[in-house]
Length: 144
Length: 144
Length: 144
Length: 144
Image 1 (cartoon, one colour):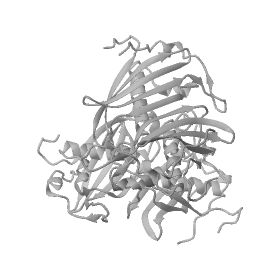
Image 2 (cartoon, one colour; image 1 turned 30 degrees about the vertical axis):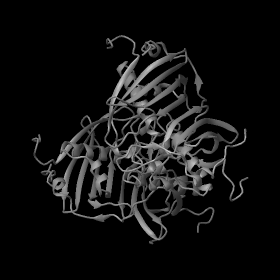
Image 3 (tube, one colour; image 1 turned 45 degrees about the horizontal axis):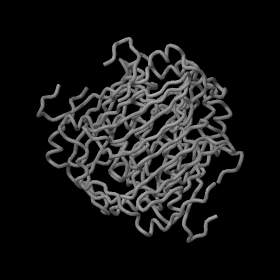
Image 4 (cartoon, chains in turn brown, red, green, orange; image 1 turned 90 degrees about the vertical axis):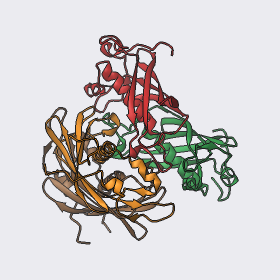
C-alpha cells in the first residue's frame, strides 16, 4: 500500500479487452500488449501525482527499449490485470517490468525502458536528468 | 489524368489489409475504414505537391464530420482500392467522398469534411480560410 | 435508472484518453471516436446481460453505417463520457446515437447502425432477425 | 536476390508513416513498430508463396516473444525501410530480426519469435511442427 506522499514503485490496472484489440486469429494482437503496459505506466504516474501531459512543456519520455513474452492468449471481453513495477532508475532512465494476469493465470511479461529528454520545435531530442520533482516520485520496487 | 501543375480532384490508393486491422469476427474493423480514407486523402495531397506536415507551422486541418456505409467485408491480405474525390469546397472547408472497391465489388462508401484552422500552443483552434497555395491545388471533381 | 430485468435503452461509459489514441496534431485521432462508441455499445450489451462474444456461435453484428460530427478536440488524459442510446429497432437492425461530453462541453455526436447476420466458415454473411433473447433486451429510448 | 523457387531468408518493405500512427509527442508511437515488423514478416511470407491466411485452416503462428530498441524517432510521412531476416529455425519455432532505416540512419532494431500451433474452436493452442510446405520455404539468413 502506498501512502499519499510516498514515492511510487508499482501499480495494477484492471482492464477489459476491447473488440478492436483482437485480430482474425480471435486473440488480442500482440502489439496491443505494449499499449496496455503504457496505460499502466501512465496510471502509475497519475497515482504519483504526475501526468505525461508534462511533456508539453519541453520535456518528454521516449521509449528506448521494450519487450514482451506471451504465455497465453487474451480474448474479446476478457478481464485482466496489468501490474507494472519500477525495477531500475538512473539519472536519465527508468526501467519497468510488467505482468499481465487473468484470474490466477500469467498471460504475458514485459519490460520497458524510458529516457528523459528535452524536446523543442526542430531540435533533436537530448537526454537530460529527470527533473527532481519527477525523479523523487518513484522508487525501485523491492524484489517480488 | 492529372497534369503536373493542374489542381487535383481525386486519387486512388492501392492497399492491402494488414493482419492487425482485422478483428475477431475475421473482417477489417469498421474504424479502420476511416484510416484508409485518410491515407488516400494524404496521398491526394502529396500528389498535389502538399503534405499534411504543413500543420506543424501553425495551421491544421481537423475533421468536422465523417461517415461510412459498409456493403461487404474486407478480410486479411485482401487487396483493394481507395478512391477519394473532392466533392465540395468553401473558403474554410473541403469535402471528400470515398469509395473502396475490391476487384469490381463495391466494399464501402465514405465521406469526410475538413476545416482549415490556425493552431497555436494553448490557443483554441480557429477556422480560417485555406491559404491560397493550398486552396489552388484542389478542384471539385466533375460528377462521376 | 434501469431495473435488473428491464430492457436497456442507453448506457454512459466514463473513459480517459490514452496516449496512443492521440496524433501529431495533439488531439485524439478522429477514427478513435468510432472505437469509443463501440466500447459504449458493448458496455450497454453487458449491462443488458449480453456479450458480443455471442458472435462465436454463428451469429454476428456487423456495422452497416456510422458517422461522427466533431465539435471540440479531446487531448491526452482528458476524461470524458460516452453516452449511447438505442434510437431505432427493426427485425434485423438496430440504430444507436452517441454523444461524447467532457464536463459540460459537447465533444462529438455519432450514429451507428448494426445488422444481425448468420456467419459460418466460408459462407457469405446473411441478414437474419435478432434472436428473441437479444431483441427483448433492448428498447428504443424515449426522446431526449 | 532470391530465385523464384528458393527458400526465403529476408525481405525489405518500403513504408511511409501514416498520420494516425503518430502520437501527441509528434513521433510514431512505439507500439506501431511491432506492426511494421509484422507487415514485413507477412510480405516475406507472400514472397515465399505463402499467406498467413493459412491460419484459417486449423493452424496458426502466434508470437511468443518480441522486442524493439529505438534509436531515432520516425515522424509523419517519413519514408523508411523495414528489413526482416530469418535468424533461427527449430521444428516448431522461427525467429526473425528486423532493422528499420530511414535513408542511411538506423531507426530501430527488433526481434520476433513465432511458434506453429494447431488451432480449433474451443481447443487450447498446441505447439506442432511447421508443415513441410511451410518449413521448406524459409532458410536462416547468412550472417550480415
